[in-house]
Length: 126
Image (cartoon, rainbow, N blue to C red):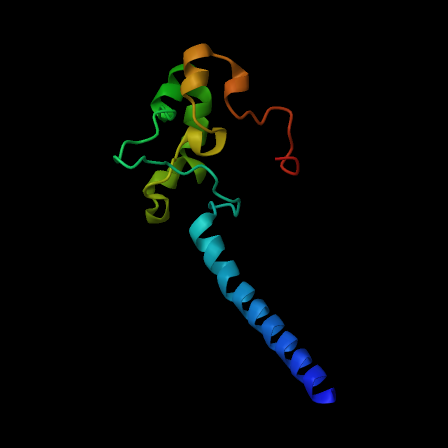
């Protein structure tokens, strides 16, 4: 009985050690592959269907700039505004829609509820 208890404890210890090592190894990798420049998780990725067609809900930052020129210019020189220059962001949505989500419905209707807004929110609630 003592031998089987010892084996169970060793198996659990080994499994725990394996999980800890896996977590330590994949943590930095996931931060490198799936994080923005400021450490926030990247959630908006350009998608394509089986035919290779891009998601048509994204309209591009130029469309946003038509109505939000001052905001567009102020973000252009920041880290967020330069995401398109990074290899790690190739194939991902960059520009306004990388944070605010797909802009087609908002651009067509002007409805602020059709886009992610950060007005009145601090960095801890985002």
